[in-house]
Image: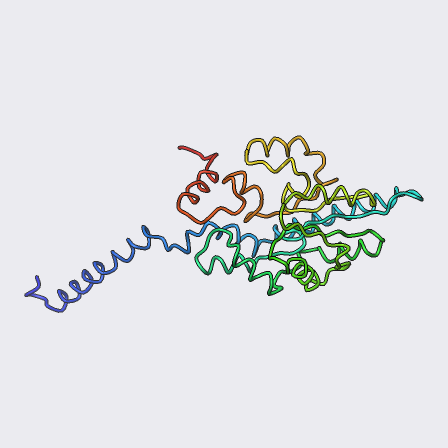
Length: 280
């Protein structure tokens, strides 16, 4: 055949060689997935960065909070304590999406405390959808706002938090309205002190521990059970916002809110993600 029609043979040979060259490439793409594509944070951050549903949940939360305040204003009696709102800061009022995007671009898939500390200084956090309008509504109706956050960037922590809140354009940003917890994440003592002078209408947070210390548990099932016991309080006393990247839900899985990046921890995370999985 090759002797009888050399041109056809040459074309056939070229095609076979091309296919042989292409097979390893296809095989590589289908078997060895790029490490960046396997990043644990990718799906969560794609949702946070692009989903209208993510933004809608913030508007929904602030709408609920506003309705609770309107009701409290309508029921307020002369001589009663002034009204107030207590809010968490990070991932409740301020969003850190570009911090997480930076981690993904670096091939990192777990929280990095050193990078976070450097990022905070840059004032790159942005107001969550609906946050500014809600806080301005509070101020317009003489409802005090207390910002309560647990952060620790050393002696500069309070000033950095003030800078972040001011950069987002929030009202009532001063030391009398900001409470920073550097050594603990227990917000209950601060909340109790505020309640001595104010009628706190609602608590805002992205973490159940923003509402009650009893959720600070490393037992996943216990945490779920405690939440169910309080289910009537959500949308009333407690307004929860979405956060699929960090928080004490991670502590319930790992026993650590900021687990180190390791293959062992990636296996633990996969087991958590597949604790309910179809087996055909």
